[in-house]
Image 1 (cartoon, rainbow, N blue to C red):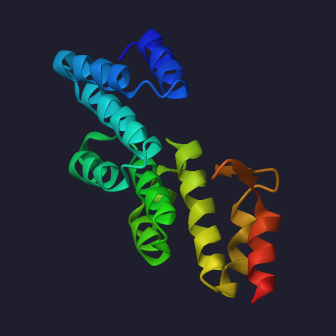
Image 2: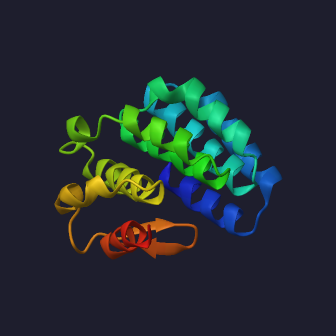
Length: 163
């Protein structure tokens, strides 16, 4: 997918023009040649499924195409985020446990730190207070966007202090 197609997709998402979204994605898939082409199409199709609330389809698509992605933290974080929307916190944690966070930290810092933050957040949400010692691994100014709002380290601490 070209940059102009990604911009077009974003506009179509904003307008919830799903027929046009899938038409563009079908065209991109039919023209895909490289592994990156196929992974970009799978990524955007999963995003479209998720935005439509088609969570099971998004999960299935990501699992089937995970090997196409250079960054596995991105895939695991996407899977976990969808599972959270379904209320499956333990399953989301299991997905994040599979993420090669430290191995990908240098090459894919943004996705790796995002996966790590979500992992710590879910651990705190599930009552694990032992992550307090590991919070230094998250930058103090880091903000994780989820559910229409930003989450920060103080949000993790607040979760731990609730229990």
